[in-house]
Length: 258
Figure (tube, rainbow, N blue to C red):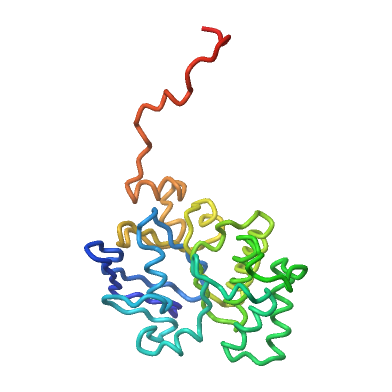
């Protein structure tokens, strides 16, 4: 099976902190792939290195066989990226920002117009298309950034926390778009902290902890007869808090029964 993304011994250190440690992973083309891990596990660092936003200390990232750091233009042309927290040109309107992204990707003007309006409609942004992005809510900003990642019709989409700060209606729109994209032969990789979301949306998942890959496979293989949440906690060593917090009930108020 063709690999949409291949990571070979990818590594990154920040000072004395090892953020990603010799991480190797292969994502089959045509899959909806979830990348999960606790805070600080290295998810964002891994995706940043895989998409050309952060140079690794060692290792290799291949997008559909194209080396991200040897031939960046070819690799980046094949993927759309939605990083977490990346600043946009927010003094443009939503419509202008999508247009600008299409031109950067060398999409024809006729295709930009058709695709832009279709994306605005699909994401529920048509009424706000001429507002400045700086005046968008966090959820609207996430959606217009997704439109920018899709405008050039990539074969691979890599999304870092795409559902964060997104309301349920918008989240359902995004899920529909992603499912249709995979159904047409594309590949989606996204990170999330919400196991229920990954379990309902993804067919494959990788779990990382402390910069290392601790498990990957189909959802059923990772769940192993349990829930993804339970298996995730087992794999990353999550334990319920044991501290005595009974004091949170607060002191008795005047007039309370003894």
